[in-house]
Each structure stands twice: as structure tokens, then as C-alpha cells.
Length: 156
Image 1: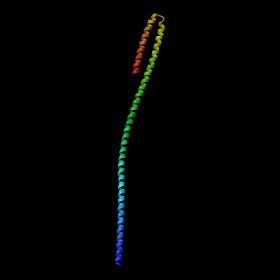
Image 2: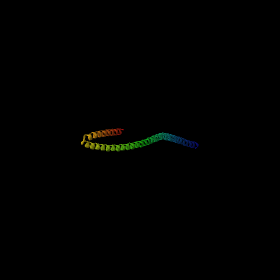
Image 3: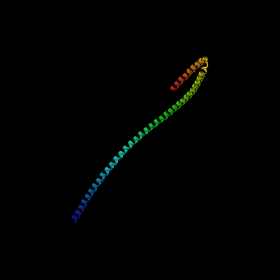
Image 4: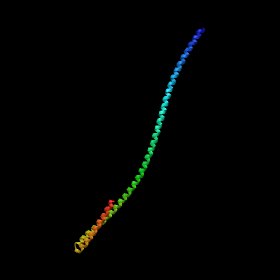
């Protein structure tokens, strides 16, 4: 009876030993699988940290570029205002020159009218012709001088 019980206990022990080995093998397999998953997650975390670092650097670079662009825009606004002011001055000068030119044209018309009047009167007598010729010369010289002055003004 003892031997039978002893044999039953030995079989139970053997079965327990096999169960234990099986459980240990499963535990080892589970541990290896979990260790692989942990390593995989750690690799993902490292990759994410690297990506985050790159993203932060890209953001910093973009902020610097944005600041530079804003500064360049500000310089352009100042330059545009300066150019607008110069344009306004030039337009005022042009209007002034046109006004002076118009006045000179009117003066030239008056001189031409006087010349024509003088020419009509001078045909009546030689003396009048001599005086009219002198007036004509003077008026033409004055007109030429005025035209030359206008030309110089418009060229500048």
C-alpha cells in the first residue's frame, strides 16, 4: 500500500514537475514577448522624441524666418512710403513746370501777336519797318531765350 501511494505521489510529483516546467516555459515565452513589446515601445518613444526635437527645430527655424520676413516687410513699407513721398514731390514739380510752361506759352502768344501787329504797322512806312524789325528781333531773341530756358528746365 505504501508503495502504491508512493508511486501515486511520485506520479503526482512528476506531473507537477511537468506542469511547473510548462508554466515556466509559458512564463519565459510571455516574458520574452513582453520584453520585445517593451523594446518596441521604447524604440517608438525614442523615435517620437527625435521627431519632436526635429519638429521643435523646424518651428524655431520657421519663427526666425517669419521674423526676418516681418522685418523685410517693415523695411519695404518704409521704402514704399519714401518712394511715395518722392513721387508726390515730383508730381508737384511737374505740375509747377506745366504751369510755368503754360504761362510762357501765353507770353509767347502775346509776343507773337505783338510781332504780327508790329509787322502790319511796319508795312506803312520804312521808318516803321526799321523799328518793327528791331522789335521783332528783340522779341524773337527774348522768345528764343525763354524757349531755351524752358528747354533747360524740362530737361532737368
